[in-house]
Structures are given as structure tokens and as C-alpha cells.
Amino acid sequence: MAIDIGIDAKTRKKVANSLEQVLTDTYALYTKTHGYHWNVEGPRFSQLHLLFETQYNELWASLDLMAERIRALGHYAPSGESIAGKTVIKADNGVPNEDQMLANLAAGNEAVVKAARNALTTAEEAGDQATADLMTQRVSAGEKAAWMLRAHVAK
Image 1 (tube, rainbow, N blue to C red):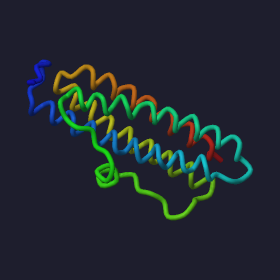
Image 2 (image 1 turned 90 degrees about the vertical axis):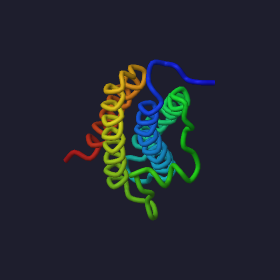
Image 3 (image 1 turned 180 degrees about the vertical axis):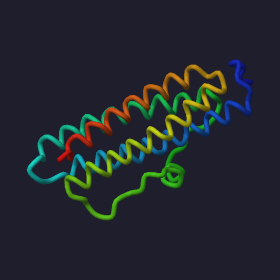
Image 4 (image 1 turned 135 degrees about the horizontal axis):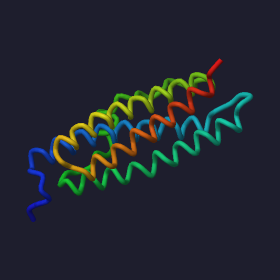
């Protein structure tokens, strides 16, 4: 059945592609954040364990919204190996210390914010208010998360 939502097929594909980048980066950040939650050690264990849990739960909830938006635009959401192949957020080798975890997650959130800003611009140019609204939320959440992570390493 044809999709007739006021955005042509070529433009919907462009928006979906930009959303895919945000989704893959968010998924990689979710995985990293959850892993850090499991493996954090040190004097700030309780505080960081809770912070990481709060952040990975927020990331997890956002993934479904983005995947469903991609589907609403008529495209398939990435999964499996296509996520690892597209994200700019790389996996760690080993388990970093507390400060490195905080720095890595701040950088990961900033990468998601950059991808979300790009998708926001693409959505605005397409007249796609639903995607723009979703990306505005992702920018705000990512900026707040990065700020909170940076605040834990301020000297």
C-alpha cells in the first residue's frame, strides 16, 4: 500500500537515513552505558552505577520511538550487524576506569547530539514535524546527559 503522508518517497528516505544514524549511535551508546553500569568500580561506584542506569534506561526508551518513526516513514529500522557497521561510537577494548567511562559516555552523548541535530535539520527541510519533534527531544536529552557526565569529572 502506498504511503501518502505529505512527504515524497525520496525525502522520506533521506529523513529515514538520518534517523538511522541517530538510532545506531544511540544503540551503541546504550550498550556502552549499560556495560559501564555493570562494570564500574571505585570510590564513586554507587553514584555512577545509578547515573549509568538512569541514562541507559532513557536511551533504551528512545530507541523504540526512533525505530517506529523510521517504520512510519516506510523504511526498515536497522538491526544486528547494520548497527555496528554504521555507528560512530566504537566499542571499548577492556574496561576503562571511572573517569575514562565518564569521558567516553560524554563523548558518546555528544556524538548522538550531533547526529540528532543533523536529522533535525533534515526533518525541518522535509516539513516532517514529527521527526523534528523527536530529534529536538534527543538533542535535549543528549546535551543534558553529557553535561551531567562532564560534571562528575570537573576538577
